[in-house]
Image (cartoon, rainbow, N blue to C red; front, side):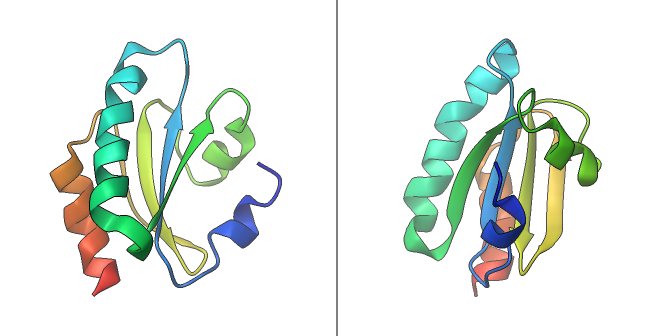
Length: 99
């Protein structure tokens, strides 16, 4: 993604999943991210980045495995987790930023 840095600069939190098509755990994260998107609505943005294609971005933020989920706000990564995450866990951290 060419404009990732500008995309995460806003005051609206951005939930990013770094995934790979070949990874089974990433496939299980798809409905989780959809649930987060539905619950957060316009208060947050969700984005999936292909780890293989956007590895430079993942490496820049110290994310070296898939799936990895991160929340960005105002240009900073404010939370992340490697591995499978539950929607309620992501939403818990996201809601702290939405207020």
